[in-house]
Image (cartoon, rainbow, N blue to C red; front, side, top):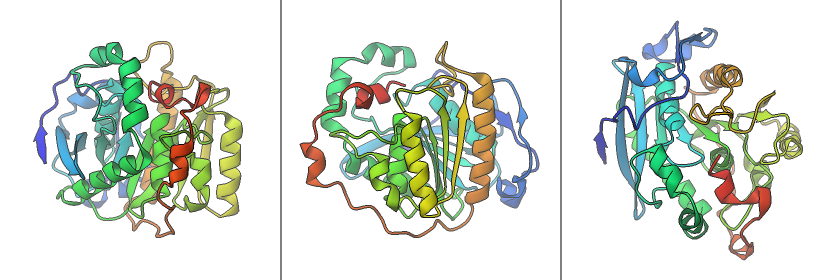
Length: 326
């Protein structure tokens, strides 16, 4: 494992909150009923109470980069994985990790696209998107590799003195929410899943649809969506909600009058501070409710079968590259 401090360019911009009433071990568990006090968006990076660094860990033959943040001089604290939709360097990803640390959690954003060309900024990443990254997603990004990389991230967190015992939370955005739900059905380390505008009914040659694994999704789920979303149709979320309700899986669903991707601070014309603020407050309450306790033990979904490799690359709203550019 290696680590280094982030530059401000690498670890900047989304939303942040100062949290009052921190209790148990100085972390988040005693503040279930404390309301967050909003501060200007994009300030989590400069908060002196947040320790942050770039780290990496081994996962099979992969060397996986990640962004880490945790409360300085407090802990051990419950941990949360953050699954990005696009490149790890997109500003809101690192800022979300810092926001979790402000709220009394350990945050770790795992780079599931570590096979992409190396870039040093979000501007450089956007210019690199195109046929090359599309081909890499099609050939390199597979569900078992995703599950292994995230599980290795949990194993890394378990070795850190600032990580509390108990279930690990998972937050994912768009394609990251898709992966968060799939991972929740395949790991007994997960204590809760928060999915932002995840395409729950989509599958392709890379990954199965969360709906296919819904019977194995036995951990609490919180879903944030928008009223009209061709990328993540609300009707598909209705179907997921019905399955989870029938098997008594705790499920919270919130719908916003906003656009798909509303949480991404760096996306002009899409970011919605009102929706993002409200969704983040709800996310923190949810994580405080379910983390800090043993993760529920449940039967795990079977590993990806050969059938997945018979599916052609999805088209239209099911295209995985599109889901990982939002």
